Amino acid sequence: MKPVVLVTDTARAKILELLAGEEDQGAPMGLRIEVNGESGPEYRYDLSFDAIDAAEADASVVDWLGLTVIVPPDSIDKLRGAQLDVPADNGSGLVLRNPNRPDPLAGMDVELTGDVTERITTLLDKVINPGLAQHGGYAELRAWEEPRAYILMGGGCHGCAVSSITLRSGIERTLKDKIPEILEVVDVTDHASGTNPYYQPSPE
Image (cartoon, rainbow, N blue to C red; front, top):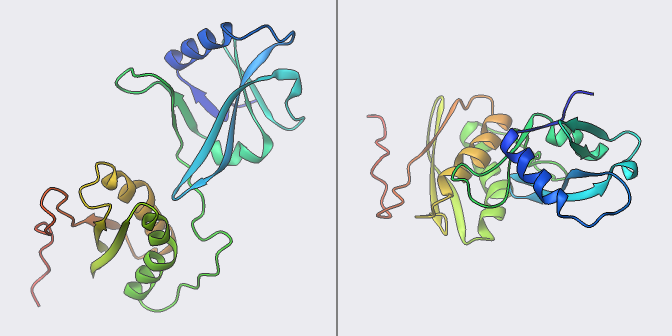
């Protein structure tokens, strides 16, 4: 079976070390990787050691040189192509790099109509900002100059060390996926001073 989640050698070694420290459960154990929810533009994950024999019949069960990785059926498409690794700074824990994101409009009654500016504003107001508001932040459209959307991050997102990541991994992906006219999203926020020096509108 083709692996759903790729495991780097360093991650495999660390997991096998942890697995060796587990109490003997009387049955071979593997690493179970599961999507257990959503948090804004990202999935939430649960990693646990589980008996291999307890895996669902249609789960992905793959042996990585002695480490069995179990992905339950409902998580296969959400995790396909992901990579499990150690942090770049060799810190503790593991990092799951997943190219997949939840559909921000799934289960929502959001109709995207009007010109590009109106559709961007609808996505920001009804889909993106409710999640950012939980952290005291917001995003707003400052300009649309085809094919670029100029976005300002404000509130709790202003000066936040991860706000540029939020823009790239969440907002940009959502806007591009749902509004095909957008080819680039430009962050016009000056996170250091609170002003907006990077955006220079085109002359009339």
